[in-house]
Structure formats: structure tokens, C-alpha cells
Image (cartoon, rainbow, N blue to C red; front, side, top):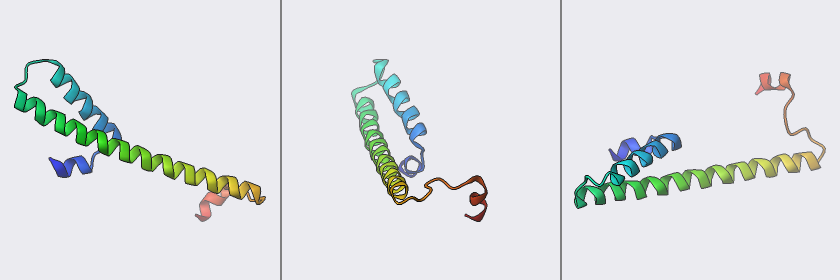
Length: 86
């Protein structure tokens, strides 16, 4: 299942994390099952945080680039017809 987690989207990981939380809150699991779910949940939390941090950095880089282009008098957003040449 580890390979599948690497291919999951943030939304899928959040859904899985919610499912884990729901299972744990039932109180119907053995301690060993709780520990396995807890470990899986912590792993998902770490991956989600890493993906969100990376996305935030990418947005900051894009915004910095757009700000610099604007300061240099460059149009930071291509005109509609300019997308055809990309």
C-alpha cells in the first residue's frame, strides 16, 4: 500500500486521514490496529504538510517573478492570443 500512498493526491490523502480518524474514534479496534492506523495517519500528515509547503513555496516564487516583471514594466500575464505561442 506504500506505493499507492505516493501516488495519492492531497485530497485523497485527506480523505484517507479522515477515514482513519473515523475508524479510531469508534473505539472498536484493538490496540495493535490503533497503532497501525496511527502510524499511517502520521505518515499521511507528513506527506500532506510537505506537499502543501512545496506548493506554498512555488506560489511565492511565482508571485515574486510576477512582481519583478511588473516592476520592470513587463506584462506578467500573457494576453489571450499569447497563449497560442506557448
